[in-house]
View 1: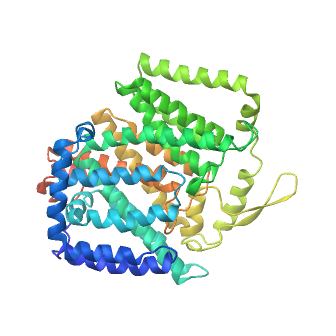
View 2: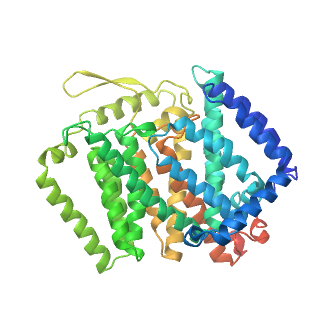
View 3: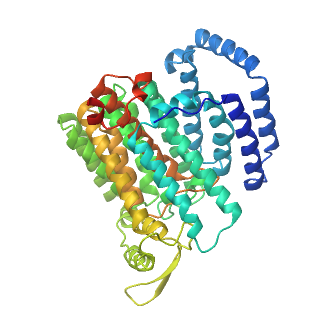
Length: 480
């Protein structure tokens, strides 16, 4: 891949500030976005002085703060960017916050903050075949807008903004994790405790208003759907399980895992429970030893005991599924009417399915990631989705064999099992949705794993300029 054209990054930031402010004013008129424009313009015009002030403040904090030693904060600008990225992920776990405000935080602060490092991030991450495949997939989803039945300019702008921020989020995730893997994993572990605290607060707040266990916990804020909330928190259950096995803080991560698992159970979300179980079994099978088997046995025994003590909750988790098989049949029948390129991204995903008893059930989406891709993009869109899934699993498996760390692969398995039987907004517009945490974040991990695999095979670090010189990210081509 060729480096980004040598345009002054301050000029690019100025252009982004103007473009973002216009977009925000159209898409989010309720947000006082004029101040975002002023802030970005001040950042451009006074960057030299602001940089000097920032470095002085940052040096002082790093030298005199006890917290900096625990979080491994240094004066490196990359570390500061990583800390801001971790804070953003922490905000995503504060479920009382609206999704539009979280997206505004990312687009108005995180993207401008990372602009200085964008050429280095791009020149490193764009060598990844997986990242280029993701960009192709996002581009095809955007292209399908033009053969949709109805096109609204505001919806097009919202979807375009979503695709750009998702591409940037993947670029930032992969680049930061490839550059600072230890610090990245450290922050990720700290986020597990934040996820557990948030889960406990939601459980307490919900069941202080509704009866237990007759009421299904739905959550608050942008995760007010029980399936969405369970999918986000389940991601950190997988991470906490891995940390519980491989770190010295076994008790702490064990409590985190228990709290998050309680959240998922009380949301009655069986698909997420199945995805967590499959990820745990996979991690146990890949690193089979006495400790992992004992931990898995204890979790299974505890769930059986709790299930026997609360038969009502067990009945909710084992209830029959009368709708989805019929929804899938009807949605698939509708999707194959436009076999090659689909109906377009803005096609109406709703329909009416006929159930076993002859009654009609109206659904709002197809409840399947792969059927949804077939409906939106036809065989071409489904093929891109399948390629993306298979190639990411393949790369993370190869990296797991080399490094002995199968957590990124387990997160991918978890994410794909979550989206397979559910309907998710692939490009959720100008708001942060659950798909960022349980689908795009593991894909960012997978991109970083591909970069680190190439680095391990070639002996060239991702931060080295020589890493960008090879024409392809395939290890075989680099050896040649």
